[in-house]
Length: 175
Figure (spheres, rainbow, N blue to C red):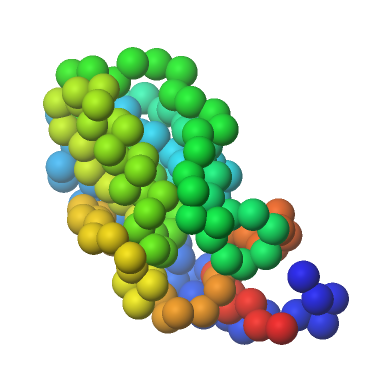
């Protein structure tokens, strides 16, 4: 990325905290008695997921999966591959996938189809950000945070070439 890249705050950390709290409330109402497995999609979701689960006050389990569809830069390569699989079986479990962003829908559809093959009792999706303007395949987001414009965003776990994940705000990255 260009050293002169410009960052413009799209969502300030206070707005993010409020949205995470709202999502946690909705998830709590749905899962309080279900002992769900929350599956974080690495690497982008780890900050969001950590903040989210600290606000959930019911029994749950956590697992992670790592998928890749991006090469270097800001454009998806289009092919999805599993780089780190789940550690525990999910058959018969209530599963909630935690994602940082739903963009084209290709990666998350690949994951949801993969997880359905494991026969969970239920399977739902929570996404902090949604970029519907880039959608190539339909995606049902059960717990949606922010809708974002067709811009490349970074911060709060979202990256560009492994940079900017540590920003406390969600920013638009412009050259």
